[in-house]
Image (cartoon, rainbow, N blue to C red; front, side, top):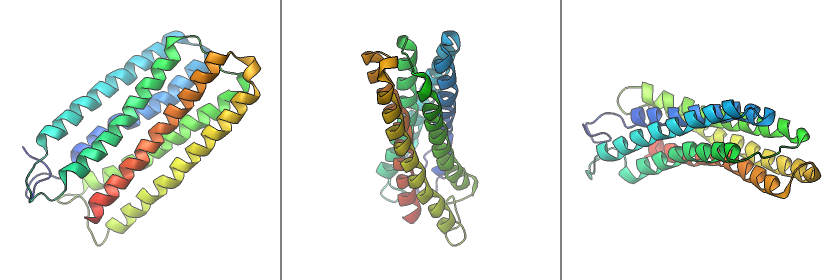
Length: 223
């Protein structure tokens, strides 16, 4: 069955299903940081495996969406706009997989005073992805076009706009984590510092992709 066509199923349902995988990955990143700080390697490996499995499931949904999207010029939504949202959402899972593998690949030393900020960063990222998921769920649950243009569009657009502010909070936390890490660099080793900075960048990147996807949803609603 084609989706996104003039008389087809709403495109928001598969987008929501796909984003659910990204939300699960952001939650698992929050969990794996605690295990990482405690040096709990078995738990870290289990969470890493679960993230990889979730990312694989997201890929399956992504491919299904690509195949199912209509190419008709009469489509209610633009194929490229939907595919861009899928790409952004998929990168949430991809970045989660990358950071989890960095955590398990070697014994990276996290200076004791930097744990709270890294954990808060992961928490804020999870909240950012969740905010996007709530908007996506509203669009997916409403029959037909996915929303009542007069009653609901403005409210959903306002919620999507707030995701930009949430993403900015994660950028600020990366800056704070970098300052703390460099202030305590003698408590670690040079390679660990480099890897920790990359981990923070990747975690924050999940919020970046949520923000990019939010812009895609905004475009779909306004069209």
